[in-house]
Length: 193
Image (tube, rainbow, N blue to C red; front, side):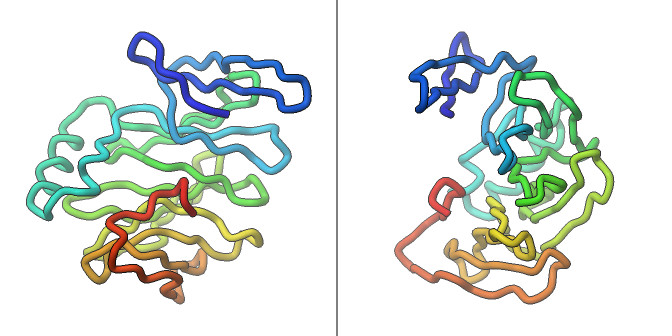
C-alpha cells in the first residue's frame, strides 16, 4: 500500500503482488498513516491536519503549533475501515487531534499519540472507542507508537534526553526502557521502527 495525492487529497493505493493489480481505496476523507490488522480485514488511518514541523521545532514553537492546532474546529481523527473502504468507526477526541494509529497484534486496540500543549503523549483505545487511556504522560514528547509482536509493550520515540531515541513501555504505562540511543538521530519516525 502507498499514498497518492490527487487534487490535494490523499488516497491509499494497493498493489497486489500476487496478481499485479492496482486499486485505490475510495475513502470519504483524505487519509494518511495507514495500518492494517494482521488478518487483513481492518485498516486504521488518520485524517486531518498533521504538522510535521512540530517535530523539529523549539519548545516555544511547539507550544505555538499546538495552540494553533487546538484552535482548529476540525481535529485529526482515526478512522477504522474495512478493506473495501467502508468506515466502521471514527475515533476522535473533541479536544485534541489523534496521530499515527497502530493496530495491536490482536486487532482490538489502536495506539496513537496526541499533542497537548508543548508535548505529545501515547494513548491506547479500543476500536469501538471505549477504553481510551493515556499510556505515557510526561513533559517530553512521546511519538509514533508501534506494538510489540506479543501486544504486551509499545515501542515509541521520545526526546527524554533532548534528542529522539527509541523506548518501550508496558501497555499499562509501567517499565519504560530505552532501546536505542543515537545522538546523531534527530527523530525516529514510525516508518523506521
